[in-house]
Image (tube, rainbow, N blue to C red; front, side, top):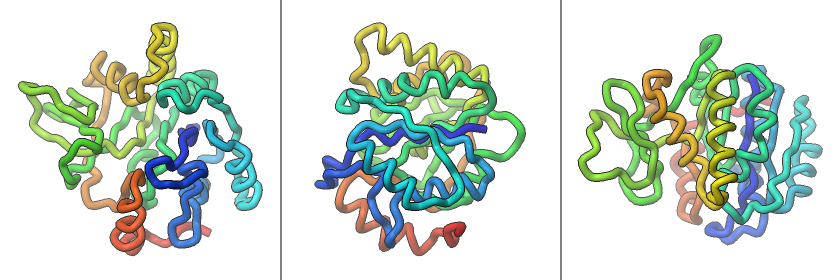
Length: 247
């Protein structure tokens, strides 16, 4: 199993002139937390897709020295949409085996990763039904247990029986990862490099919704960090609920 961390962006909305994955929570960067949790789950084939200030990310990995040697891929046009970062990862997506595609700006508990990696092979999505409604969360809507929408704004009239926030972590089997890379390429070839990668994931899901497992992870602590208020909440509400980070 291979993990691809999308870490090209920086904390513009956080007022942070550094890669978002280097944001410190209780003295540890989000990147350190990712790497320690992945290593504990015995996933050491790790690809980090960088963009803004890649040398800072390289230095953090070298500083940590926790027994993993990730590969680095660079999206030099990181200011465009994250679908371009996914395209930079095309080779890693198509190397075989299951692939975890993970946003790097997420603080999460190891139980979230355990749910994601369980079992030999899976096309798996994570849905948190305990989310706070609003314009920012990416909504994962399901009908009879299968995905029917993955967007921040849900179209009127869409039929679904459950809705939650997408955690931003996806697990693809080898076949599905290759198909995702093909869809991403159509975005680049079609001049849509400014789109978020979730749009390409959405196209993938809607091609064959029955292929995907949607796991309800409501109650497992996690949050995506985009704004200064998120940092406050991460420290005060999420961090105390996390299991101890593996050493």
